[in-house]
Length: 166
Image (cartoon, rainbow, N blue to C red):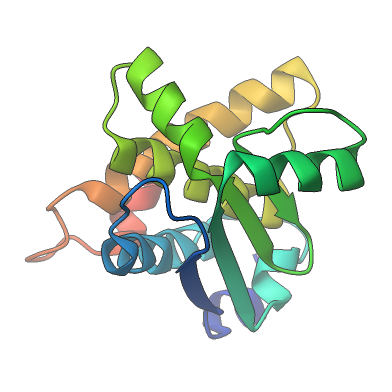
């Protein structure tokens, strides 16, 4: 990896809750997202990615209704989806869909939202999940990053980078 992408400042990331149906701890999600950005930027990527070049990233927590509208407008598919990522640095997450999926997969809502944040940031960092092999690679990386960013191993001698990449 080139020294510029490792030495470049991580983009600022903001999380904003635009929906009112489901209570969400935005402050904790924003702290989590900042850890994930730093973790992603430590990955060895052969070419520069959108994530490495962005100055700001916005995570928008939206309703199913708004997500359905975005999904139709930009992907030409009906109904809401869990997460949509735009390469200019916006990640939209449907909180209502996240709540349904959390129940179905026996996750907490927070854990499901964290998974979607990781997923969106990996898309910005050049990962794709359209092909089966790529989706498996992305899923493995999601698990590693999710574990690293939520572990209490940051204290002491273990750095975020070594936790993410080892």
